[in-house]
Length: 93
Image 1 (cartoon, one colour):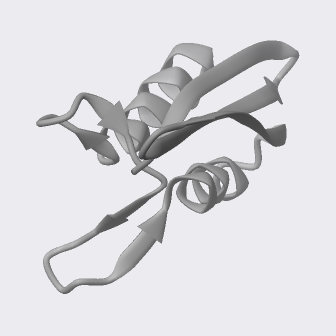
Image 2 (cartoon, rainbow, N blue to C red):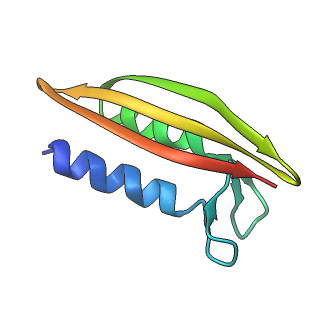
């Protein structure tokens, strides 16, 4: 059974695949061992769709600085009348 805590745990698990330990930021894309490309937003939405969780996702432009930009990704979801919000700052270098 999926509950709000499990949803948060799974969203975190997916997001952590995109974390760059060396530079300490979350990336938009990641590659697996076969060099297949994955997008964080699509992977998060795919999890929610598979589990029949109602959600709305929005990516908002943050700011640009020398050499990188930051955007914000927010997912509001409703599962069995449990509301949740998952947010993450994404950096592009």
